[in-house]
Image 1 (cartoon, rainbow over the protein chains, first blue to last red):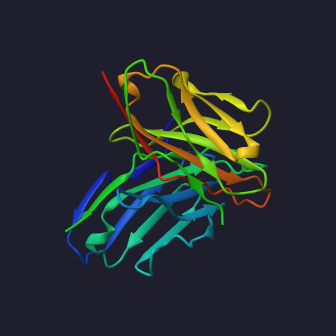
Image 2: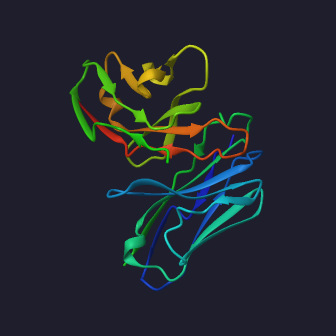
Length: 116
Length: 116
């Protein structure tokens, strides 16, 4: 079975450019999560969606970051304009909504983003 | 607010040594508990999970964890580590509600280095 698919795997771009990260969750999963991982701050939840609806975006660092989930099989995380401090690995994860919230999250391979 | 504490940032062990990684959380309600592992350059993978029942949970690759409710702890253990266990280990918690608040709170991670 295909897992969570993220693209691109690596992105290197200059500061000020727009960056779009993409995620395809596991088919049938109805929760999707975006995380950022850095050495300094560890793993941070940025935003998550249930049934394509954003539930909690309190982790989004600032207005330069936006996320959308237009349908159940696709989500984007956009940074505009990008800054060097945005350099990190961005992970997408998906899970099934279940009574008791006991379903584990499945992670993609991540996008390693470098802003020069 | 919920928080997850992992006491050790970096643990170095020789092969065949026993492992215990600490995890404490600060939420008084009913929780679901997870341990994830991240091998170098890879995404997070689920090691084991606890929802209810026997507080001693067995996971993949010989790992186990014990939920001690009175101590708000969910420590990870392995009796004899191998070089291939070198990775970063994350404890995670979510609150067991029916409201779809299925986001995970992650600890900062513990890096395990196993010396052959």
